[in-house]
Image (cartoon, rainbow, N blue to C red):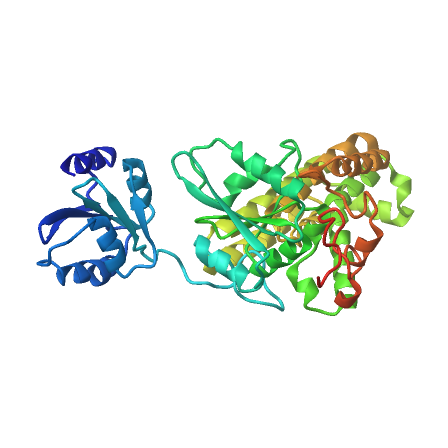
Length: 475
């Protein structure tokens, strides 16, 4: 027993937050080992030490391990047979009872180191449930099970990270999911070699199939209702311990244009909003490029009076339209990033003040034309309509690519760039599923909830790409 204690101290670097307390019950000695930072010391005092104090003078007959397993009032007691397992449980909020026969028990007494359930921050709720995921695996799993009370909701757990040993959970509806998709995701996870998973973003980066693609193929969300909807469609949710974001796979391009709030409002209103989102996507990418094209190459693409007005405004500007657009785009990104990183009570004020002062000063100094500020502002604001940071970043890159193409080839270059963008999107897949579905390939049954939204009672079938054995809803 003393030898094992020395080995534990050696492996843990004799860290001061680990406690080794020697106790004696009857004629047998044992150690109580725990870390002060991960365990609930009040629980140790009230449920372990207090109960042990009642039997200090009583002789223990038979196996001491079996005696304590039956005597101590804890819901989670496990038998431990190796030092590596002792270290694992110690670092996961368990305390260890080490006996003279070198057997040990791990007793769960985790400390509550998590914040309470609150509202989603990056996916604001207009109408719908207000709760969001937190950094606790069991709590996040509970938020989903509270919504889907079915025996078909299965969970598979595994550990990833040679040092962090992070718990990962795969959630799926066993009566809906395609086994091939599940096996492909499991194989992908099993092949991940990494020191540690600190957040689900680490995992998301390794689940993306095309590393050279700007657009996200794995959806990340902090809303339990969105995950529940995805599970009922036949998708898989990946929970990562210590992360408030859950990953959903496979994901399609159209998923990033939908929000959970779409299913809590009238279909006709949601159809209009989805069309606006699509227009915002096109405006964010194409409008600066189109302005550069018509002021540089294709002057006859807009009315004569308008091109004369643009020319007059740009008469005192010493830079080409591309330099103007890049300068304003970079300025906007600086303001947006500073607004994001600064404290919330002053960030918005600074960004508004900076935008007003810089824009007015740039126009007054003749560095930037007024119309360019309008073009970049419309484009940038349209790109912020989406909650996915990865999609916003993809829009940003393609905006710059389109501006460069328009500078050299004009409107014809924009057409070619748009075709290349569509080809690029059509060539993507998410775990074997076409990224542009249900538009490419066209799935007629899914058009009821793609761009146009009809009443929920009219959507009777699930996506055939996600399930073949349970296509009809309500079964």
